[in-house]
Image 1 (tube, rainbow, N blue to C red):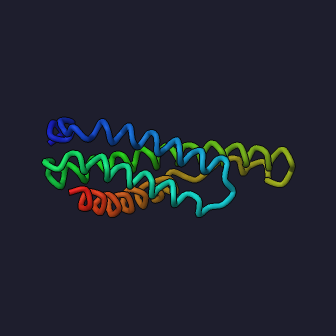
Image 2 (cartoon, rainbow, N blue to C red; image 1 turned 30 degrees about the vertical axis):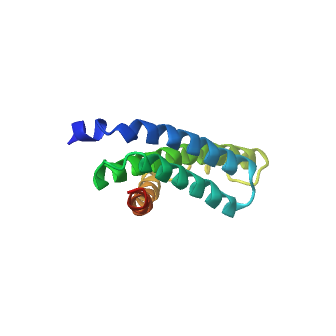
Image 3 (spheres, rainbow, N blue to C red; image 1 turned 135 degrees about the vertical axis):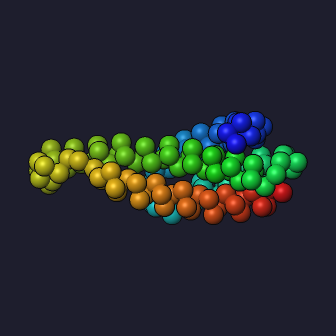
Length: 136
């Protein structure tokens, strides 16, 4: 099964598209104060993945779904890391200003990260299923 996934010719290209999308998402999070501006970046990422996967029409649906999900998750994880660094810097700044108690420098718990990433995988699977279907 793993050999079939790694033999997918669209997988490495989807990772590259995901890296570019992740940089776009991280820049949007860093330089924008408006939350809804993240949606056009995600739409562009999904459109780029659909165009990429349309080139591989001979691939079965499962292989296209896997490639789309890997690209989506690559981009989303890059954004998640960028948000984590920004949140940690903001917590340190608030503590220096005295607006956050000294013991509040830690971020979310392991369970907090787990449910966020689980939700991201669920949403990514649904969206990637649509991208794989449209790219057929």
